[in-house]
Image (cartoon, rainbow, N blue to C red):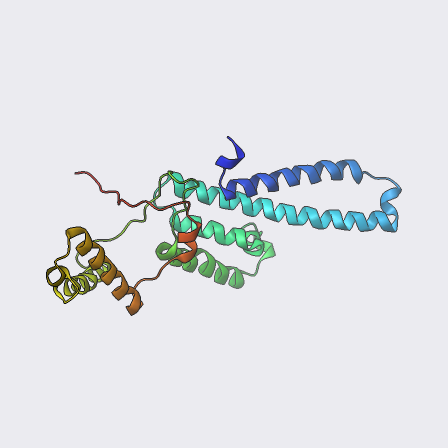
Length: 226
C-alpha cells in the first residue's frame, strides 16, 4: 500500500514501530557490557537512550490503541464507546498501566474508584459523543452515526422545532408564495432558516474541527431500501 493511502493513525503507528526497532537494535549493539558504558559520557548516553526508549514505548502503545480503535470503528458496528475508551487510554499512559496492576500493587479502594470513572463513566459518556473516523480519501465511504428517529426521541423534537421555523419562513414575506420562488430556492431557504434557528437556540453545534479535517463532504444522504 502506498504511503499516501495510509491514514494518519497508521502512519504514526508505523513510525513508532520503526523507531522502537531501531532503538532496540542500537541499544543491543551500543550498550553491551564494557568499560565504555561506565564512563560519565557513557552513563549520560545510556540515560538519554533509556529516556528515548521509554518515550518510544509509550508512543508505540498509544499508536497501537489508536490503530485498533480506528479499525474497529471502520469495520464493525456499535464500537464507538470502546474505541473512545481506547483513545482515552492512548492519551494517558498512566491510565493504561492501571490495567496491568497486580492485586498486591494496588489499593483496592483507589482501583475501584478509577475503574468506576475510567471504565464506566467514560464509556457512558463516549456512548453519546463518540464519532466514527473520517474517511482518508475524498471518495471513501463515510461511516454514519445511528440516529433515533422514533416519535419520543430528541431528533423528533428537533425536527418539529426546525419544521415550524422552516414553514414560517416559507409562508412569510420572504418565502415561496410572497416571492414566487422556485422549488429549489424554497428548499434552500427553508433548510437555512431551520439550521439557523436550531444553532441560535444552542440546540445543535457545528463540529468545525471535523468539518475542516474532512477531505470532502457527501451531499447525498444514504437511505435504506425496504
